Each structure stands twice: as structure tokens, then as C-alpha cells.
Length: 535
Image (tube, rainbow, N blue to C red; front, side, top):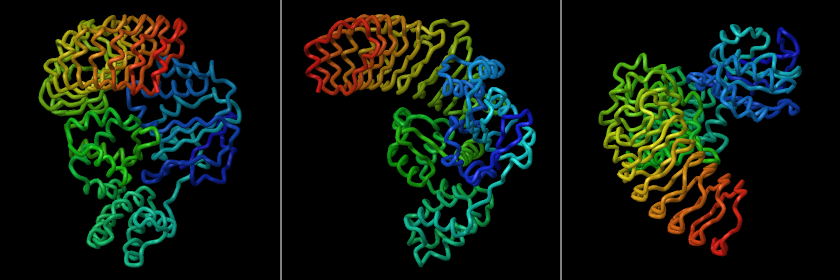
């Protein structure tokens, strides 16, 4: 269905009719995301994808409002409430003509928070939704709603053939089976693509083709059709697919791969197979993506078949029957009272965001990835590694912001740690000398730690370190000479370290260095002669 609203009038009646409406908006759960290539070029294009999923988080709607403000006015502050966001729209965005695309809206409160009288006359809004009734509740007139149909048989056969045979039409021996599959899929583009990719290497296995036809015909539901491809995956591939569906859409693949490598043996092969089968996508920036229907299928599987293994929304806390059995938990806002018993074997991944806690609960030795984002501790003002139990298997630790300082004597015992990210921990004054014991550490980011003093000499012992980020560490004066011992260092970020006035001569020893960020280092007086050794 398509919803166009002309915001010239209070009634927001649609005056614009497009010649590409078939590409614009979802009507049913099986159709692909729209393309707006041919739309009006004079408007500022502002797409907001996956509104339904984003809005499910506690700060989801205000995060979307912040995205609009950032894109249209370079506003970078947090939006405190939906009403505040609407007020900011009116103050900052009045007069802007925008083509606003809201993808996958399922509640009136979402459209009300993002669309309003702040849009200038001539602006247009496209809303995609799976729920036609929601558009009526949002006061969209019937003539502005267009329900899309599936592909015609010839179009569907071409799409399927490109994925199953790498050609425009089926091979002669499989023409009848291909037509039956296209008919059974009812023109659903995603189903045709995924089933085609699933059958691509099975041209000699006629039974697989016949079985696929029977299963698709039996299950008219699109998720059941897509499930055919999922069910053929190995156990490792299934687990990685479910992790991406529940947690890692929009995330760079590098850190999840560290996580998976501690659990599985064939991680890169699994990711490649998932991509070849079109169950996941990896963009040019190595970021995971997934069609929203595949995402929904994966989350349904996680809830029903893999019940009690993954928790990804705070709202699910009230319905979780046995929270201590989860191996992966991500919570954004809410009450942590029920997380006090997570100290048990099996918890591998814990991501807590925007939470106020009395103290950090005891964590088990099985934990591999800990992420605390803008969390505050009401009682315990210091984040102490000593309360985190025997977490010697941890590979990834990310602590961003919040009223956190570190009693870090035990950090050197995390011998398996590969990624340590302490961005914007403004209470962090020093790193302990024992940090030099982290022999496996590859990534250390201290960006925005504005009270951090100079690094310890033992930083030079990190023989595997590839990334050292100190951007906006405005209290750092100089780097230790031992920085030259970091033989694997590829990126050194010193941007806006305004107190740095010299670089050590040993910087010329960084033979693997590919990027040196010195932007904003206004007190840097000169470069050492050895800088010329960097090739």
C-alpha cells in the first residue's frame, strides 16, 4: 500500500500521483522494500527504514527523531522525549521541503512522532506498512493507499531463473519444476530469490526440487517458504543467522566474527554460505543487513524453536519464563531486577544500554562479550572488574559513557581479550600498568576519555595491537616512547588531542602503520625526523 500526504493543507490530501507507484510501498509481508529512484529530485530525500523494529526499543522513537534532526540540521544532542522532538522539528526544520520515507510503520504513534506541520508546503511523505488498518487509523484517506500485487508469472520466472540457473530462463530439464515453484510462491520476490539460491547447486537432485514444490504448496505462509532454506543450514550457520537476525543487523561484521570464532570452527565459511543463499547481506562497508521478513522469520524461530536462548527487547522481560537460561541478552532501558541471577554457565553475550542499576550483577566465566552503553550505577559509582567474577574467557569488552570509573587492577588477567573499547568514559583517569599483559589485544579505543592522563609505558607490550584510538583525549600530553614497539599497529588516532605537543622519535618504527589521524592537534609543534620512515 502507498500513503502519500500532501502537507499543503490541514487535511493532508494527496495531490501527487507517481508513474512508479508499484515501487513505492509494501502492501503485504512478502514484498520487497521500495525504490524511489524516479521520485522528485528537488526534495531532500530522508529515508527511515525499519521504523517498527527501531520503535520497539525504549528510546526508539526519539532516536528516529534525532536522525531526522541530524540529517536536516546537524543537530547532535539527544532528544529527551517525543514531545521535545516534535518541538525541535518546528524550531529547526521549518521551511524544509522533504521527501520523507517511513518504512514498516505499524502504529499511529510512530507516524505522529515523525510527521507533522514542521514539513514545508510541497513536502511528501511515503509510508510503508503491512497493516492497512493502521493507515486508516493515521487518517490516511483510502484513495492514497495502494496495495501491491506479486510478480506476474513471466517476471517471476525470470527472477527465479537468475538465482537458480544464473540465466534468464530455466534449463529445459527443469522448466516445468521452475514454473511450479514460481506459481507456488505467488509472485513473492523474496521467496523466489531465496528458494532460487537454495536450489542453485541442486540441478542434479530432482527430489530436492520436487520436495521444495510440495513444501511451498503446502505452506502458503511466506515465512514457511523461507524456512525451507533455513532448515537446510548447518547448526553453526543457523546459530549465526539467528544472532544476526536478533542482534547484529546494521553492525560491522568484525566484532561479531571475534565472538563467533570463540564458539564455532567455520565462521567465515558459514557467513559466506548465508550470503550466497541470500539469507543475509553484507554491504560495501562490511555491515550486516537482512530483509525484514527474513529478520522476522529468524526472530520467530528464536522465540519458538530456540526458546530461552536469545533476549533482544526489554519488553520481553515480562514474558520470559526462565531468564537465567539465556545465552545472549540485549536490553535497552527497563528494570534489571531479574538479571541478578545471570551468573551461570552459558551466558555468552550481554549488551545493556540506557539502564540505571544499583550495581553490575555478577557475571559468569562463560561470558565472551560484554557491552555497557550509557549505563549508570546508583550505588556502585566505580565499575570494578573485581565484581565481574572470573571472566577469563572474555574476548570483547565495550563500556561507553555513563558514570563509570575503573578500579582496573584485574584487567591484566583478561588474557583472551581482543577488543577493548572504553569510549567516553570521562571518569577514567589512568590505565594500569598491568594492561601490558593483554597479549591478545588487537583493538584499544579510548576516544572521548577527556580526563585520561598519559598512557603507561607498558602499552608497548601489546604486540598484537592493530588499532589505538585516542581521539578527543584532551588531557593526554604525549605518547610514551614504547609506542614504537607496536609492530602490528595499523591505525593511530590522535584527532583533537589538543594537549599533545610532540610525537616520540620511535613513531618511525611503526612499519605497519596505515593511518595516522592528527586532525585538530593544534599544539603539535613539530614532527620527528623519523616520521619519514613511515612508508
